[in-house]
Amino acid sequence: MSDKIDENVRRREVRYDKERRVRIKWSEDTESLEEVFDRRTIMTVLKMLNTGILKELHGAMKSGKESKIYHGLDPKGEEVAVKIFLTTSNIFRHGRLKYIRGDPRFKDIPHDTTSLVDQWASKEYKNLELADHAGISVP
Image (cartoon, rainbow, N blue to C red; front, top):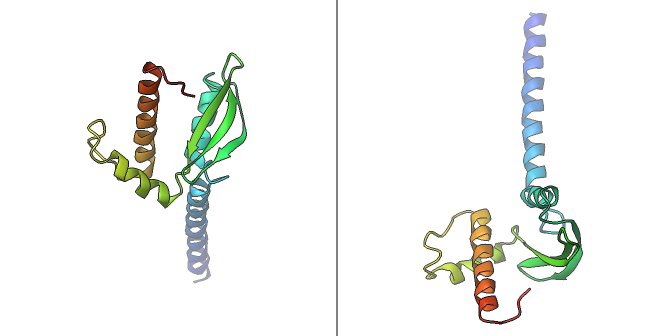
C-alpha cells in the first residue's frame, strides 16, 4: 500500500513541475521590457546585431502611443533610427486596421498582432520609399 501512495505522490509532483515550467515559460515569453521588447522583438534585434544589419542599438529617442524610436548605428557607424512597435498595446491593433483595410497592397488582414505589425511596417517602409523617390527627405 505504501508503494502505491509513494508512486502516486511522485507522479503528481512530476506533473505539477511540468505544468509549472510551462506556465513560467509562457509568462516569460509574453512579458515585455519597456513595452516593446518581448521575446520575439529581442530575438529580432539580436539577429540584426549578429548578422551585421545593426552595429549598436542605444536608448529610446522618442516614444509615442504606438511605437518607440531607438538610436542605433549601422555597420559603417552611421546613425540610424530603429522603430519598434508597441505590440502589447490594443490601441495599436485597432488603430492600424482602419488604415490597412481598403489598401490594395494589403488584401488579407491578419488576425494576429505580429502579422499586423509586419504588414504595417511594410506599408510604412513603402510609403517612405515613395516619398524618397519624390524627392522628399525621409529618415
